[in-house]
Length: 142
Image (cartoon, rainbow, N blue to C red; front, side, top):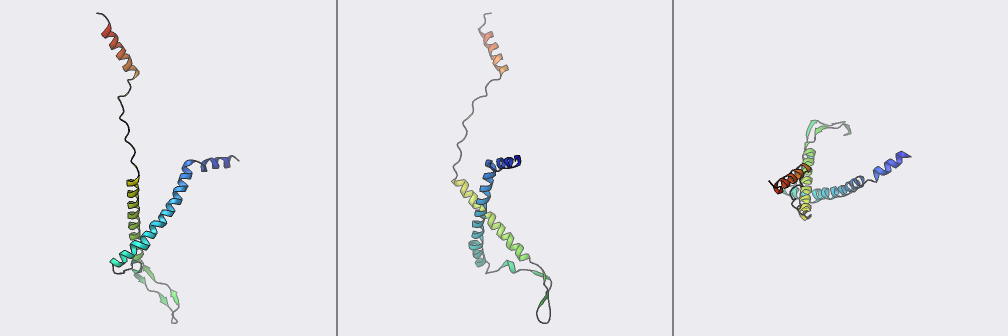
């Protein structure tokens, strides 16, 4: 029974709940950013590059083997470097989109007020005793 109490206490801590909320919001935000890249930015890049699709680019190491009827016996072995290029472009675009959103959020978030200037530190006990001795010596008759 203690195990379940400990688990409940752990799961109900604020940090765990905050993390769970952040993961859910992050997943939703990731879907938005992926849609932005795939549905808006990549078509524009396709227009700029003349419709070149990087995902089709590859270097065939060994060709596919088929029988006389055209049935595939052994698939081709290829380096699909186009997928790597496409994934790299997707990553850069997603990272840039997230960067822009974070900059916008930072601009919209109010800046905290600067801390009030601190006065001089309080004198230590030894300093207080020395000041008392100084004052007593100043006021004592000679």
